[in-house]
Amino acid sequence: MSNHKNKTLATALAFAVGGLGVHRFYLRGCVDRLGLLHICSLPVAGMIYGIGHAPNPFWTLLPIFISCIVGFIEALVIGLTPDEKWDAKFNPASSRKSHSHWILAVLLVLTMLVGATSVIAMLSRLFDLLWTGGAYG
Image 1 (cartoon, rainbow, N blue to C red):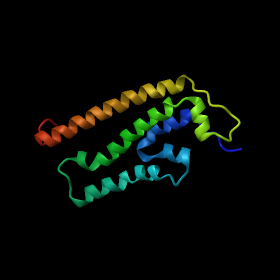
Image 2 (spheres, rainbow, N blue to C red):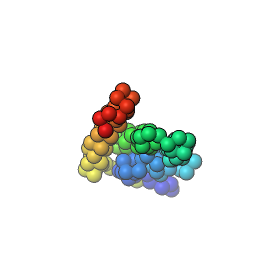
Image 3 (cartoon, rainbow, N blue to C red):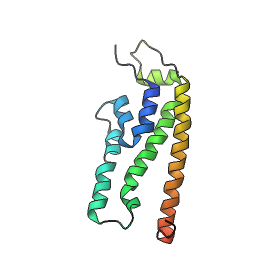
Image 4 (cartoon, rainbow, N blue to C red):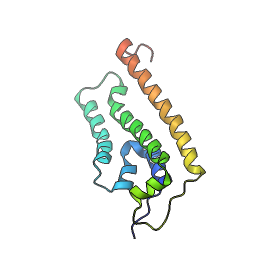
């Protein structure tokens, strides 16, 4: 009998620490390539900081911001997957069946709220820096 992968927990991990790929490691193990790519956003941000002190910290944190936004998208994909498809993909040998509850719906609403706000904020700051040189902030 294999471990039963909980869809609500995977969605919560993607929402809270999706920028580090923790949800990918929970679902696919410690050698998941996309999970490792999420973790690589930290050293990339460090390299950007070390190469040349950017005039704005936004450029240093951009890889982490992008990784977090991808984590929000993955949280939505995980949470909106039907229970039958979820069990077929992640719990084929488990005798338990997944049942989504209201907590998952709250997580999806929070993910949309925080994720959309993050995307809008990142794009507005990016356009401000590219076209005005940061004149508005």
